[in-house]
Length: 455
Image (cartoon, rainbow, N blue to C red):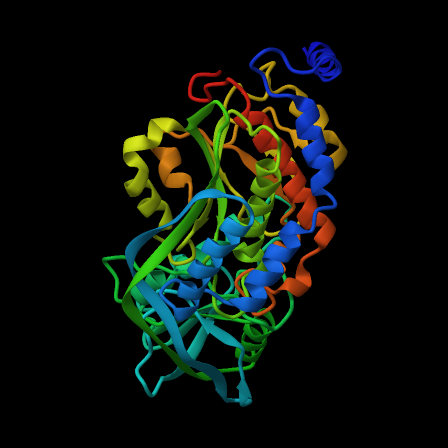
């Protein structure tokens, strides 16, 4: 089967596409053009410089909406519009933390999104350190009565981001601490870095447990507290102020209209909202820039692919809501969305493409293996199961998905922190992403495959 597949790919590339099939030569040209195209970096520089951090519900997100409308139109997209939706938006106010005794020191901290605030005067209490979430769960009832609990659980660095999946549960554990009597909750930042900058992110509360304030400490500060508690009791003062408002968020989209089957739509993009400490360069300005640049290159073709490519900038991924809102707004046309995917793991190189079940070995898309090989991307035999949080709602409603997996080895050094800025983006790797998306989108948008039926 391997020899047959390789021969078919070579034959297809030599002879061109079959009638009604995508032309691999066009996809290859898009790939090569993207590697030297400045569009993605220019879009990302513009977003991070002119708008900066963009939490949902903030004035900056309103500026991001207007920026996105103008940018999409300038890049040649059609049907450019906004889709507003309502949400409760969590916004950060004054925050601080310090060790009062035995050795006074200020700490680097960020409140976790959706956390309740401390009282205006803050909380002063002894801290109890556990080395893992499992240790917290196994503690006796009321083991931490009246204390601040710190879970100091390290995260493992992995290429595929699985280390994050294993570690991030600690960010969602304030209710576990409150069940054991804690009056506040801290976690070691969910990060692979040893830099002091803390990493925020959303948390959540269980309905059957008291709500307590929750924050994330910089990795060295979490270790410092653990080292101090080995000598004796440590007391902290914690101030985490925030407020919640009724807000409007906006998802923005634009089309590369299909040439012969425009009512069949492929939905791709990134989320335009971000956390507030940095400028949201890799989370997820990069996804916005990559998808916009890929769509822009395809829009410049003399003949567009058969299907419409819709580039979407989702409006509230970090604190939730945009995926569900997108499903609600488009549920009557889900049968017209033939494929969906999202770029939301930074700007480092893509190493793997996953397609819907059966698509990778279908003769129409077999040339993708050869097209993506110069980019050092493999087409996986396994189907895509996770294509991004903004598309998971339409995925669960039956829309097939694809995933271009990025190297996440250093992503979690910066994600959700003050270091998420343009300075950490590598232009060549950003362009490699654009090349992968442009070539892949051209092939799937010009194919005849029904991704719901191919097996």
